Length: 377
Image (cartoon, rainbow, N blue to C red; front, side, top):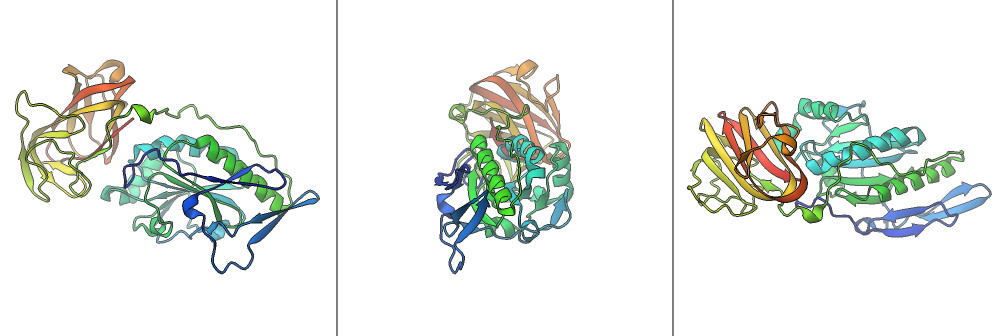
């Protein structure tokens, strides 16, 4: 999930080879700018009897964490406090499925490299208003069993300092505070881990200490594999400030108004369009059911379907004219095909074994049910 709805884009990276054969460093072209006024462009690392010169004029100094409004798993922390460490800054938000799918790798790296000098900081920058709530974020951190520090960037101070536009987005910062690599979206985990290993080895050389860095590549058991080439339905938003022609009803969006939507019998359901039935209030970042009952219909092409939802209500899920039960029901769906909304978060509705085209129907009972987005896997 990101502001341009890019979920798997990998930033092109240039290669800088170390003279003493330390490995490979990756440098993002968008950050490949000389640091103006930098008096010392060359840094020296003593490796045994050899000296390695690393030209850091091409790398950007990492901006400081800015306007942080809360801390989880840590006391107040700054990058200045962490000078001498290798730091991975990960921009994420807890209802973003793309971010959630990266967490197993971040957890594995934290476990594997924390005692070697790596510090991971999850910068939680909200996409939706409810994601600014400290207790909501804390509950998500506990649910995902995140052990590394998480900071709340509710005012986007750090997001803007990094000129970031994407969730997730990882920045790797070396022991002297330079951004040496960045990666947008999911994937590229092996490449990112190799950079971590190289920067930790470089750090040990600067410090003049012997450090054995495990060069194996992590493969978390709970990681999800996604083939983006087989997902043909993009993320779909219900809020009028996000959506781009994603509503199939002819009534369309009417900002800040309650609209009575209908789905005619035998209506043609166009793919990748949201169809609504019932009275729904059109809000900036979500829709809210105002009638006692409502319906959502979507024809999609993917393997898994999630919604970001909140408020209150009960959902009954069916697909392709049948009750959604058995192996195709998502993690949040009961054996009877029901979902009880118990918080503002992501709900997994469908989990097929294969990618394919399906028509999903969500019957809603309960006024004030809120829905923000569909995401797919």
